[in-house]
Length: 69
Image (cartoon, rainbow, N blue to C red; front, side):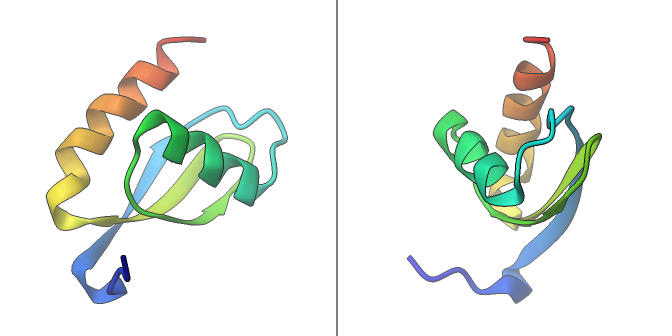
């Protein structure tokens, strides 16, 4: 489905990306159920344009991913 970027909020998540490319991180997050569009990433965090209604759910998923380390 087409995502209208104006309906999204840019959220920065702490994530040790282990040198993965942005598109690889996008797939990883998608596979975990994170909604949104990965804008950029570096070693320590990832910035995602998240649909407003998915903010809370994403935060829960991201906390779970971080706790796997």
